[in-house]
Length: 129
Image (cartoon, rainbow, N blue to C red):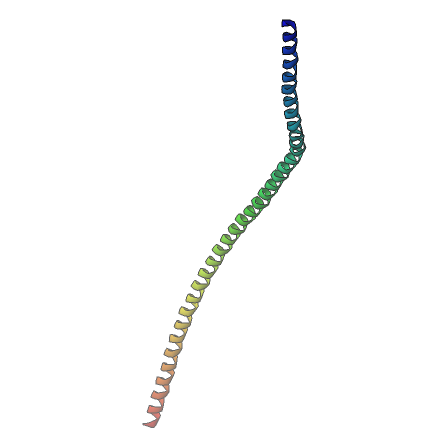
């Protein structure tokens, strides 16, 4: 009986081991499609990451160029404003000089007119006497 009991124990342990192996195999099979899906998604993920990096690089180049152009434009504008300021200052000084010259010319003309009037008045007073 002990041989039969030992054989029965071996037969019972074999199905237990077989059921464990079956469970392990089923777990592996369940995980295998997930791995396949991940492996299938990995190239897509890499492609998406590559596309995202290219997009980031493109946007960085565009904004870098735009920022550089804006910097140049600001520099040009600053230079143009400085030139305009110098021009307006020199024109203001020129207009002031012309006003002073016209004021002097006006005073000279008024003095000449007074002299002419006085001379004409004196000569008309002398003839009248």
